[in-house]
Image (cartoon, rainbow, N blue to C red; front, side):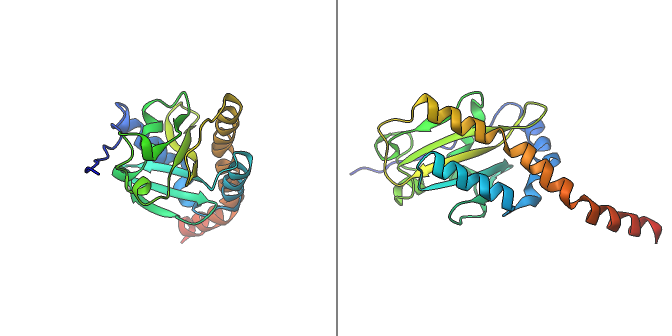
Length: 185
């Protein structure tokens, strides 16, 4: 058995604008939000996956803001598969058999047996920037992930921005009162 090396995804050409879009989305503040967590659970069930998550990619980090089985928080972008979704955000990124793929078998999550299969669809903001990924993984590889499953994954990813906006709108009265109080003092 030889040594395998994982190469992280290239950084998109529009990384600066994409970074600003992530920050202005407000989604980073919604870690463990009930609606986003429910969406991750819906993705996991609909795709018969072991794990699903809503992920934002910012600078050198992948931020798991909602998931079905933990792993919330920051993870190094250089070790995550979600960066590959951002490179070609118009179509889902599929890795059916990660342990057998020479490009990905050296990834630490693959080597540790956490990812045998990966599917990710870009979370696209209102201005068209891919700010993150809705992803689903299995410990065991899959033989296929058909067009229906890809359409389901994409449709669920398309719901992240509206759910995030709704969650932020629900918290506005608290923030609005605080801001008003600060300005009045």
